[in-house]
Length: 376
Image (tube, rainbow, N blue to C red; front, top):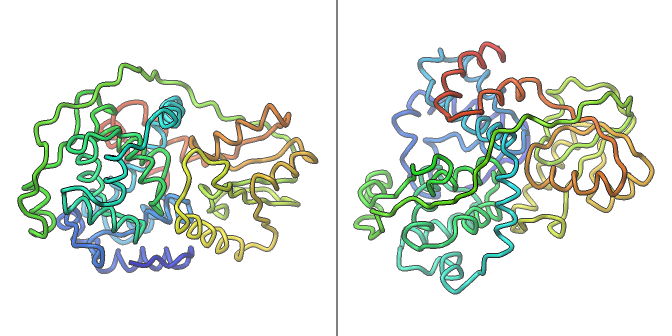
């Protein structure tokens, strides 16, 4: 399975999916047809997670060709990513606790067997190898994988979420972390997802039959409570001539930006990340950044050392808001140390959507017509 690593390639892939498969999406979407056939899903998430194309571009393009009623399921799935991001923005402590929890979890022999694909569950082993080889898994398979990891192999959900983030091209702090919490029964307390053998057989077209799993597992329990907080995004007109952005927000051409003398894309090395990326993921991100740089004449790519040098000279800058996750955590860690002032540039439509992430997805889903009205 190969991804064409460019914005142009992403748009072509979107167009091809709309014209050939979208009309059948709601009937076919849950089937995992194997690593060499993902034709029943759009496979746009590696681009969307980096905002090479945005969720709103995808929705707008789809709705230009189909009425909402015909593509409602696909639009809802696209907006899950927006919902998760908004949910985490309103409860950022969840990300902090997740990364802190990882520090205290041992990678024992059972963990090593799982990540090496050497368990007694053949479908799970195959998915481990597919993830490492293709850096992508079908969404339904991700749910089965997480359920097996948590309830049959009895491994910590945090290490599973970390394993996905290490290897997925579309790894995203919000979607990945919160999806694992949802499977575990922590996101909606007491409501978990337990993989069933019959379901795996049906949706792999009997590739995997008679899979022996713990199908009666109770949801996990975590006594920590996460109260709703208000969005805390610095917005001050600093009259800066310097713009900084990260690989999680690459699509700067769809933002209303002023003229800048200098534009920097910051790509943190593994040494500065709480979760270390697989080499193929690093290379994928570098190529996506390269595509963006090639379309602009004044973007310079720097790492944390380049940013350190830059902030010795410039103390005020505009920053495209990277959302809760690695990049924002790093930015906050150097703010006080370097005595920085920055003005966050946030997509207006993101903030509009995130207000509906204060409750469950049903509440968010009921507001999708308002969002569509906003973007069209």
